[in-house]
Image (tube, rainbow, N blue to C red):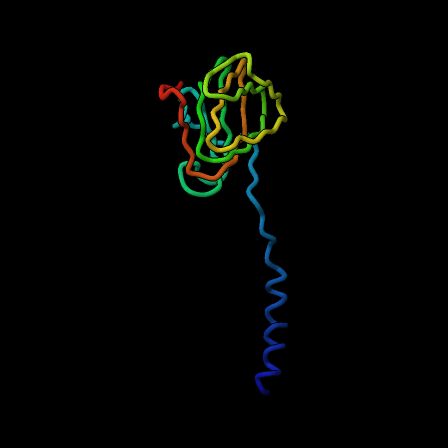
Length: 148
């Protein structure tokens, strides 16, 4: 048997094995599987990392839990982000100084984008969970340097 006849035989012999491999599956998590930890960037918040690590280069997805009555003063982030409000109503305003008149209420199910380096501020009047996606490393840069 010459080698030109051997190649199709080898392909046919391997094909059934490859076809029996289980399909690749993505990550699946339900809320009870999230591991909440204190947020290292903003005191009083909790974070659950879903994908990646926001403190390292590369994409990340995390959920952040804000307690009722939380005020996060004007700040920015070095990365462009997307937010989805999972529960509660998220109140966000844009600008270098906290201004309650400038808040927009985003109820659960809302989505928005946050450009890199753009100052904004946040208030929660009830417990809120948001899902954040971005490309790390990220940080919180308070406009006045003090933060909260």
